[in-house]
Image (cartoon, rainbow, N blue to C red; front, side, top):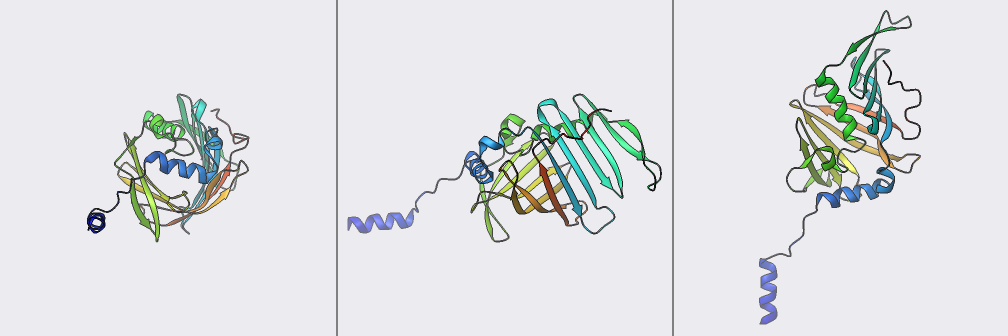
Amino acid sequence: MKKLSILIMMAAFPLFVEAQTAAEVVDKFLNAAGGENKISTINTFQYKRAYKANAATDYDEEVTIVSSENKFSRKKSILDRDFYYVLNGNAGWLKIPMGSRDKAPTYTTKDLNEKEKADLLLEVKDGLMPFYNYESKGYKLVGAIEDVTIDGKVTSKLTIEKTGIKREYYFDKANGLLLREIWIVNGITHTLDHKKYEDTKLGIKLPVESSYLNSKDKKITAVTTEWILENPTQGVSFIK
């Protein structure tokens, strides 16, 4: 009779399953991506991305970040012309190519306003992985970790936000890697789904094939990424 009562109670009150914490989700990702000991040392890095949607708006970009010195460089290449967005400490500028495309370009330089410089500084401070040590970057956790299914895969959803930006991260519960990231800025939702990861020379696993969509253009764009973690500032100028 006593055993029957216990069974009835267990059926009525299922065993409590402790919810994951943000720290546990991030730690699982760090272990899957190569280890926190490697990732924590990356304050300077570069990535080269190609955005392809079979449209005139297709472009390439080369982004270099030196977090410790508040330095940022983005070379955006569209229609065979290179535009440079540069932040060096408190100074920021845009270099715009001039002249016809069949000749070597000359450049005119325009100083960035405070809002434009703040946007670049945000990328500098967020670093390689905004969710890593997110509190030190000014973010706060929003709500509890949730289970969300994406394309048949169960993920752990982590949401963080700070003034002007909200970020959602969806980590594959099977392997710990980031499957989707969403950021919302100025009312526009940006979604990046990661399809393929590869190991870098430093032994860190990072996404190399993704798809991108935003709520304004609503055009699915294929994204390929090359990561440079060794000598990333070679050939990059932070001088006006």
